[in-house]
Image 1 (cartoon, rainbow, N blue to C red):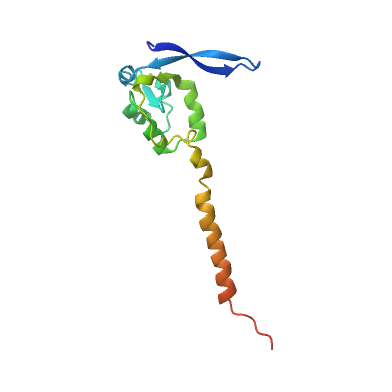
Image 2 (cartoon, rainbow, N blue to C red; image 1 turned 30 degrees about the vertical axis):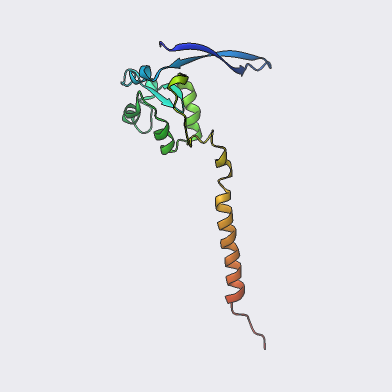
Length: 151
């Protein structure tokens, strides 16, 4: 791996309450683009670089799916498939570095749910129509149900 090494201020907690500086390897997109074969398969997902070579044979969709995206930014494809939280967690073991900051495109309207704070209130889009439907059901039943007449 011939990426550009740099240390960033991101610290990881080692369980003792002390932060530890972690080196981050940066890769240029040209370098990632060269890793597009079954012998060496790299993907970029949300600015992070993953070496998924060992995962090719295990991928539920088949290795072809990964090879089609190899050497490129697969963020949109990854999100469009709707990967589970387990799949997102599994990505961590294949992480090898980040895309060099000069190669990052500004993401407008990122689809990464972990970065999308508005999705936390997505349920509000459904709650009002559901309440409205229930209310209409009660009103219909109240006004259109024949009253029993006792004689």
